[in-house]
Image (cartoon, rainbow, N blue to C red; front, side, top):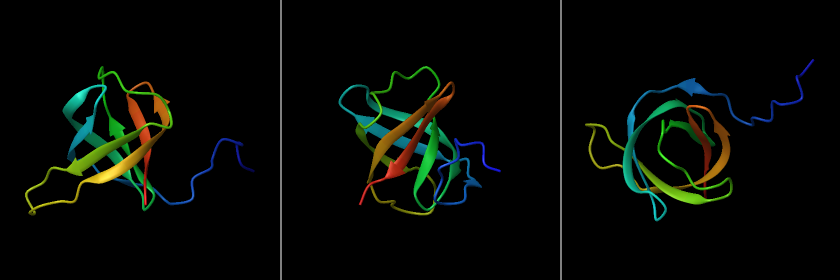
Length: 89
C-alpha cells in the first residue's frame, strides 16, 4: 500500500555531482546533487535562499567530461537540505 505521498513517475538513482544553478533571486551558485531521475534532480542547496515552488531556474552539471547543456528546471518541492526540481521541456 502506498503512503499517499509517493507521486514519482521516474525511478531515482543516487548521483552526487557539482551543479551550477542560476536565478535572478540568488544570482549564481555551485551546489551538489543528491539524486537524479529522467524527470528531474534533487539539489542540495544548504542555506542558499531559493525562490518559491513553481519558479524556473537554470542549471548545468559541472564535471570534467566536456561542455554540458544549460537546462531549465522548475522547483517542485522543498526539503530541509534542498529542493526537488523537474526538467522543463
